[in-house]
Length: 409
Picture (tube, one colour):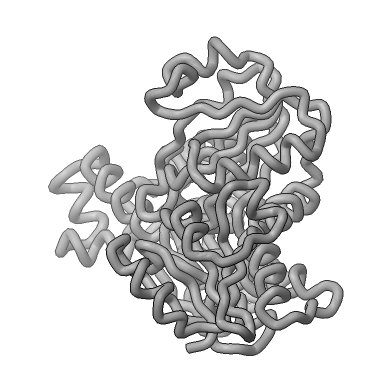
């Protein structure tokens, strides 16, 4: 293989698809333990290689020459074998990170910047912050003088936080090293993680009203810069944006929320059939695992036990990518469920009048009066959780057309 990526754990990587979309060449994943690095670079059986966690610093020692950016950052993420067999290393993370900020309209000029983590990614963020003219740039770690236990008190002026650690990455998607709400001056949150698309840290930043940037744009932009080093040619204008669009559409989950009997399951099955995506109905998954119907589960175990099982199922399914999800009517009542669905999903609320909601087989839909009370109580949760709303006020075909139009837009 001519091109590829080395790192310790690479199962989550989108890099092969990105390079294929950018340049058309095949791109391999070479996961390896640290002990294999010397032999890999000694053999030099590649034309170009990207380097990721945890080898960005170690890989510098195998390069015969370095680009200016690599020397300034202190680590490499791109190495090319030259015609004479020597290895040239550079760092395209800087251009990728800068693109990420521009795409999200986040400026570091004159800002007090806080960087989480002290690894190679942190070095990139520090260099970009310095070049942008940040007012200050501080790095926080678990055990340093500035740590996660005292950072809120010691850095109250923080305006931009950059997560340059893997904390919050799939499969441990619910973690965040800091609480954005505790930084009164915070304006923006940047996370180099791209799986999930919206880390817990970014979701907390959104809740505070901050601008946010996820790591997928950096990943594609740095890949384009690396491909230019590999091939000696730059892609056509707009290539990064095109590939980003393709990836975001492919990765994003289509999630339906709404009252019991509002049409979520029917619409979800239709979306899956039209798009070729896998369909998950969380109530059906719960019933399958419980070995009984939802009404039976409510009757024998109670609502509290059902909600616990529901949260476990939503957490698992929400971590998937590129699927269609229909949720139970009460799934949005728990904040952790909404966070799990939002991490990779776009949420659409199917709204239907209580008078025409289906009631059969729904343990909490006892009668019209109960449905009206439930709908009023849950309405604020749907409004907060959903990205958009579609009315189910006519026939099934019309609803399906509206839902498909929304997600394909």
